[in-house]
Image (cartoon, helix red, strand yellow):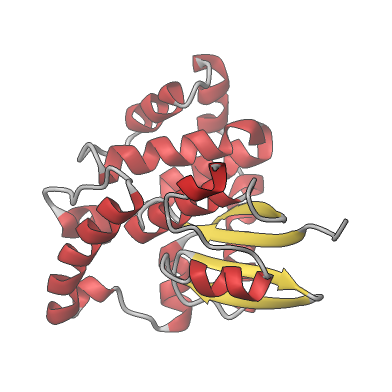
Length: 223
């Protein structure tokens, strides 16, 4: 049997395209011969370090993004909706506290990493709710199945040097791979890392992995 290839998925819950990529990758991890490793990082740090600009900052791109997100969300069957104040969510509030919490969960209770990440996306990109206040983060953790005690301990650790350094380390590792935005997948194929940016490169990724692509909602795989 061939060795399982490692796919590292770098993401930030402030990024709606990251949610789409995250859900597709979660669907395919048991279909393809791969080991998916979730890498929560800080999109703001990536953008600042690379000199990249959010597409919404360019008027024409921002207008396109509005429709593109809705089309992709419907195509991928992800209940994504644009928040009422896009600029407030993306540029003024950001996701530093949320991603530190996700990082703390990864370090302390990795079994909750996937559901916690998903519930934070649901709050911001489906329910138009806050993800920056402690109460908001704890509500997402509760919906993800974490007990109040465990969630509060994880939240209390987000200002610790260990958690801060871990998030910084993941973000710096992303930069070493040449990542300039999220979501980004680093596929380790034949001992070499290959970078795939965005939530619409899965068909190409499948081809290079020698796997089959059944679309974003892979019903065919269950036939």
